[in-house]
Amino acid sequence: MHELSIVMSIVETAEQKVREHHAQTVESIDLVIGDLSGVDRHALDFAWEAGVKDTVLQAAKRTIIQVPAKAKCLECDCEFQIKELFDVCPLCGEPLLQIIQGKELQIKSMVLN
Ligand SMILES: [Zn+2]
Image (tube, helix red, strand yellow):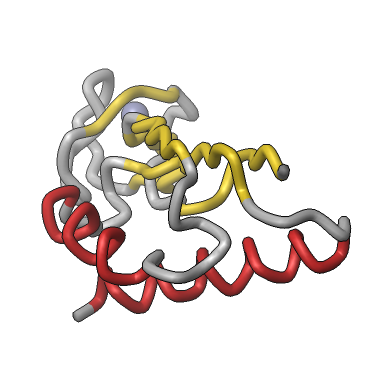
């Protein structure tokens, strides 16, 4: 399952940070997830429960910050929000878009304890 491997890599990063800072556990964690990241939120919740068990993240309060997808038109340079990867530019109708936001899946911040 894709989401479980995501959770495992988050756990890995968190454990590394805890070690680095000689902390005990993670009190809270903020995740940034882009609309185009391909992450299924329900699957992520499910994977989270299984994946953080007996780790430093077990009791962590998790906040998910969902960011909308944004693209830039390579034809006229305007920037706009998109819903799908293959949306066209609302100004000139060109399909030549560069995704500038929305694919991210990362840890924004963590509070260690
Ligand atoms: Zn355009």
